[in-house]
Image (cartoon, rainbow over all chains, first blue to last red; front, side, top):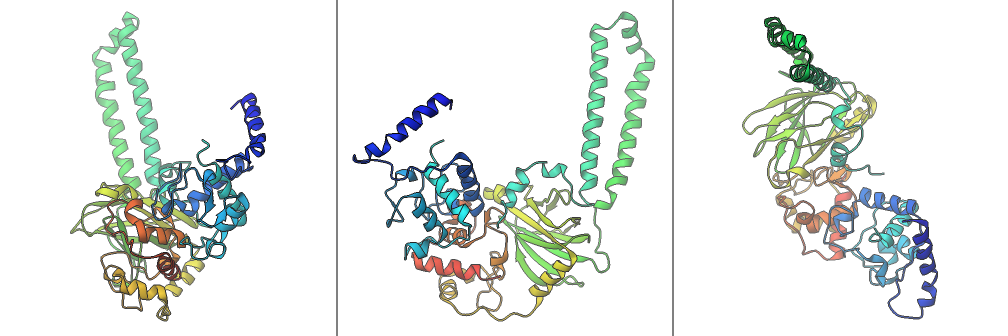
Length: 127
Length: 320
């Protein structure tokens, strides 16, 4: 993407708050940078998230949990939490503690990994 | 921190595993490969040069190329000398790779190829199994380990490229392969003979420890251990039919069709080298192994609710 179209993109993103009053707004405009997204993709593979979830670019494509394509547009995390970067990272770190009764077990990961995976999930179909 | 899956380390990675030997039983293979590549390139260049001369060379050169002498030297003497030397050198170089019998005091492990995983039995001096595991082999660095390679069904091929060449696992026959790792670390492996459906997802790992660390690991594995404490996960495991195919030492589970799960929680990977091993992947595998590894012998277990699946995964993860 050249600088000009990046500029246009940023200008469009800057208008997002204006749209907030309207419907159908992506709930999670994640401001993470490309390195965080790349690390998040690597962590997603390393932890085997694909065993339960279908995620663009990740093998395998498990069906036990919900598919996570278009996750940025999802309204709620696990049907409970608002889909914002902070909430998503907290949920990933310890799902049963944040959403009691969720089927997703606590998978050992660092805070950094959780934040990176959240960034990746919020951008997983950007490319 | 789980490393990348073994399969990925074998098939991807740089330098390629086949060109990156890590022990005395793989170095000769890599050296021979390079010699063949370089030698083949030299011969190709000679042939192309001769072709160039034949097509476009000066008449005098072309006459020499077509003369008796060129035929005798280039067509007979050169191949006889080069190929004979290669044969002698190759046999000398790789003669030690063929294992014929255990050496005194040598560690022995029987690895049996199954559709589509590996049964691992550590043997005592007399060749009796003393410890069972699956899809993973622990060895001390700097010592040779003799592998007895069997197959339970079809032909598989045992291949850990950084430690040794390939060796077929043939039903009704026992092939021997010696390996040695010179550095601690994990070495990925992969079935190298097409064996049906999920053949490509039949990975393996050799974990090489320092001798002290290996002695501790072995002692811990061989020590008598209390039966796992009764838990909700264990009760579900026994009630749901898992025990018909899987063994967990110290419990009622004594099935032999699938991998031994006595130490499943300490394995690096799940599904034979294809997934990292944690509570999440355990739950996903139990509920939906057929999507992850289509055609594998374990059916999907979709009857569990979230709490039950979590309890099962927790239980298996604690089986260290």
